[in-house]
Image (cartoon, rainbow, N blue to C red; front, side, top):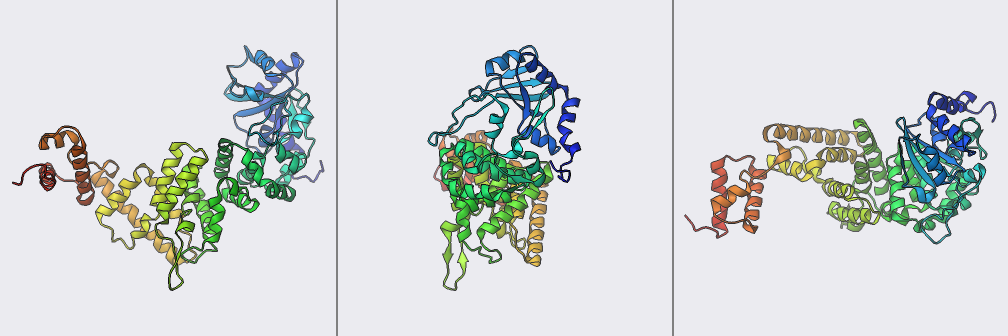
Length: 482
């Protein structure tokens, strides 16, 4: 390593120092060495230690096979698990640290199947060469603390470059998911992907079809939760990878934003994602639901584009079309229901505020806004504000002021009426008693009618609510006219 390398010798030795002050890894290394086996801290753990961001999860590699690893952990680890055993990985816990110990591997894809064929390797070099990128192909021996970097990972870490240990074609041929992982690291670490790697991603993007939807979903989620998801998203679109699992994103490049303030809806969408990142980190961490909603909020525009006689472009009801498309796409990507449901809800509601104008909404409209948003109201606030990307400062300021006013009205009504729990003023039991009907559809219809009144007029006292129920029942022919 050149003396001028930005990562100094002292930083390089940070890994050894970290191990010295945290004896767990060395203790483990001595157990393996005593049994005649090698053990190395490896991959992301070494990378993150050099970056000063190592957490409580440590990755190790060894020449010991899983059965031997379990034997060596017995009596030392506080707990062990074997969920990754089919890939040669045994998990353990010790002193608040989660350890994953994997037998040297040399697996590759056969070009047809969607899962790796696990083959154990015999040496550290062969294990490192099969790893995805050079910055993840460094290791530190235990307990000897010898640093192994056969592919220049330290140099690439200093240069903030994503490069493969071997050729990109070989690396991506072994596991096509690594193409998506390159974009993820660009988003997480703000590293630049080396041009030959980008070129290989472009040529081999269709190979991503060999990967299961679940693995793609998990990698894409990590990208979206990165410090700079926009950089990763651009790389996915530019290389054609997005077309393999999220074609709607690149499709936005064809549509002109109705405000004509942006190059296209694609650029607007990326700006909304960037804005959402700024909002969600304020509350202490990345929010996958908010970021996905920002990404998908306008995917209904291509299907709803219309050009008027005056040449104006409109996208009527794109929020509802977009909600359906978002639901379909997220299902195909195997996202869980607790992600899909709020994202779809936010996409459907993201335009609602623009009817607020200069405060002409009635209290009823405000109640409905809050009720429809339900537990997603806070996210809807953030998404709506993120969606303001106009370059016109006066317009941006007015939109912000309008939303400030709406939030203030919501707060005032919330204080007076507890909007989070809008319910009819009579419950089901009272409805059955007053109408003399058993449980069934009539009670549900009456309950819905009273809730609509509650939203429209606010809280009713008991006499008013009973009178309204009687009026509705007469109109429905359920009781005779007075």
